[in-house]
Image 1 (cartoon, helix red, strand yellow):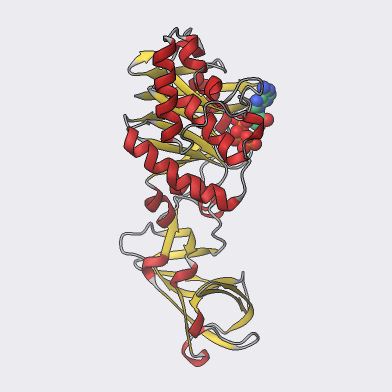
Image 2 (cartoon, rainbow, N blue to C red; image 1 turned 135 degrees about the vertical axis):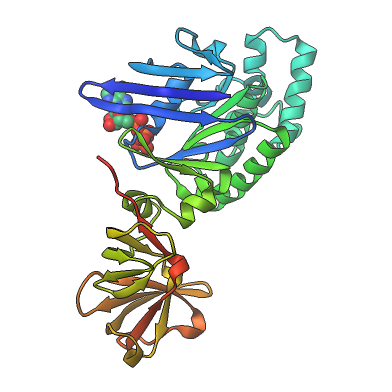
Length: 343
Ligand SMILES: Nc1ncnc2c1ncn2[C@@H]1O[C@H](COP(=O)(O)OP(=O)(O)OP(=O)(O)O)[C@@H](O)[C@H]1O
């Protein structure tokens, strides 16, 4: 459906998009995420034809899009700077793209009715957009983008302005809706939770390049590099010398999965893979520094005599007292030997 071939965009010396190769298949939902300035919006704008490429190509359905203007690319855009038209009612907003391409009045009315039903606002045609809540406006914007049956729907921070509770609900609805319609989606967000809940595949960007691309579960369980691990919020990263299935670290010996890369490496230990044992059983002595209660789980920060702290995620009933001395046992399946971050 969509292919980027060595897509490059430069602003002065800096490449906002640096030789990016990316494919999005029919019916696939791909979410691009990354820190501020990593090139997410530039990527989306390049696909939309709002940002010319300095090198490389954008292909849609196999056809090179250079020279094809935005409105001829068959895309549905839901961008932050494409606000609703305040002077038009809900129906007028949703019908906009249909009118632009010359659909008849009856046809437009039918399609608008269908879409408002789809996004959970049946019968809202005559309502003023100014009188809608943020979540409702978002739904209208989505209906407007979907109305002309775009071959690719592109979303830029689709739920950015909304509060967390509403976002979490809407993202589930969106995923179900796209699944039902078979919509192909390329979305950009800086919110990991949103990306992982919405996507079939996530693409993590760093400095205009793709740092990792994969199914949400795979990226979450096996971050490729320290950058991706830290971006996902993992802090248990330590230097290690890996030999066979054992890594030597300041946290003691840590078991690693079979087939892990060998030698001097960085190691990620997922907090769920840290268990507590009596102090005398562990080689390293740890002190319980702090405890953060999160529902039925507790994040426990452990401080070794030497080296960086370690976070353990424990069930409520296993939580030690603050200040207690404990030993630690690691589970190999929660340990990831990380790759190099590259240049
Ligand atoms: N029109 C422009 N002129 C100059 N530099 C630009 C322009 N647009 C983007 N950049 C630069 O390109 C880089 C990538 O920007 P981009 O907006 O694509 O990042 P982003 O990942 O979408 O960030 P954010 O999450 O903050 O929106 C940044 O360093 C930015 O400063």
